[in-house]
Image (cartoon, rainbow, N blue to C red; front, side, top):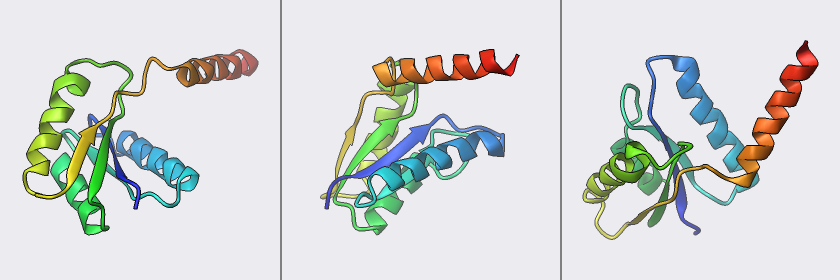
Length: 124
């Protein structure tokens, strides 16, 4: 089994904002159906990082890669998500947990920005 992916964002009081992470997870699952993919929020909404990691383990994962869904390596990506992942990993001895780099900057994000700009220009 390839490592499970745990997508982590900040979390919001707005359900539609949290649903965006779930939508991203569905896209990742569709692209990599052999992977266990779960979501978690740092705060403000369930599931927590601890609960998300537990869901990965419950699905059979022995390795989990935590993917911070942030554009920059600010304090959340550099400190908070790794700390939450470490704390959650302590509850699952024998499970390897690694934290990936945040999403951006990345050339594919530049393409998305250009695509969104073009859509806005066409809307006028």
